[in-house]
Image (tube, rainbow, N blue to C red):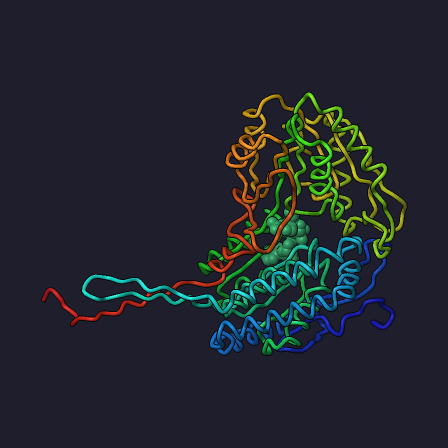
Length: 489
Ligand code: NAD
């Protein structure tokens, strides 16, 4: 039966250094978003599979942590090299899994995963504690220690990247991981596990199991798990955070957003439009940090909208995402397409003007034109809620103070951007943004060297950079007395 699928993985799960199957688990069909047809079938983890993965990660952890950081780092860097060598087949797989165009996946997914593996591989050997001198020659030294077994839970928009962004710092610090990809895009994380194993990660160090929220929940609840890192929506974040809190577990939460982008009238207009394209239409708009509320200073609003529409008319090429000339693919799944279409209808109902696009294309696959709304006000649903699709809202503003206040008037705080040639204003506005990741005259870049994450409801903790190390390790203080121990009696 499985032979009839185009992209069937060797098995559903990767545990203890090998592919493992248990077909008694609930079947999950992997659908190619360009056709709406199944291309693979995996099975959700049964309790036996969940147990096997956790036991395997728990068993492997002490020996992995006992290796030197340099040795662990070497494994990660080797994995990075393999990922780069196989960038094309991995990108093709990412495109099957998500529907994102190959022109994007070739430069943004396995490459980003490789960057994370290389970066954390590079610093693994330098993770040390410190020496703290005290009175009378006493001192404290600190040890930076692994947390233990970490659980990673992924969203469906960047399956390879998410698997590596969580795995690389976790493994660098001496933890082991059980990763559960989104049930919508289960294929890519298996390759990350396979490559890490091939690069020398001992059996059990990085495991992948499939399943829906319930499988994730079982992992979070397990007392052997010390840390949970989730990339997903705010409602899921609340549930996972709450479940993790019962065991006082460490958490990283990379959640949703409704990020603002401020375009002042002195901005380089073409550059600002490029920023808005990157922040609304890359990956068909399915990016958490998207700047979907584009505040444009009144004087340049019309020119901005006109040129933005022109850019979409001339620049967007919609089609089969496996065709390398295509730059705008389908929405990743039918459910998400339905959600986006509902938001578009709501925008029209509430009085916004659908100035461009927003229509379904064809009956096969989950294609939707990129959409631009104008005449949007702050209270409209499309300006308040995360849509997670290619829907840009243009809002007008007059003053810097007003724009910043309205930009911050949201429960989310993932990202924010400002386009202006005025240096002082750029830094003032960046300092005023209530968001974890801010951009001046660009948008949506996420290099591994820089911390990435959200404030307010958009998240807890940071991924990437040295900041991630503190989220995957803890400090032990060792007090050393150089004098006899004294007591009051
Ligand atoms: P989702 O919240 O529906 O699911 C995320 C993951 O959580 C999935 O693997 C799902 O199976 C799992 N899950 C669901 N319920 C669970 C539970 N009770 N316990 C444990 N795990 C559970 O999100 P999605 O639809 O897959 O992804 C889209 C969302 O992710 C958007 O809100 C987007 O903004 C966000 N996102 C955030 C970032 C970031 O870095 N901040 C990156 C990508 C996506």
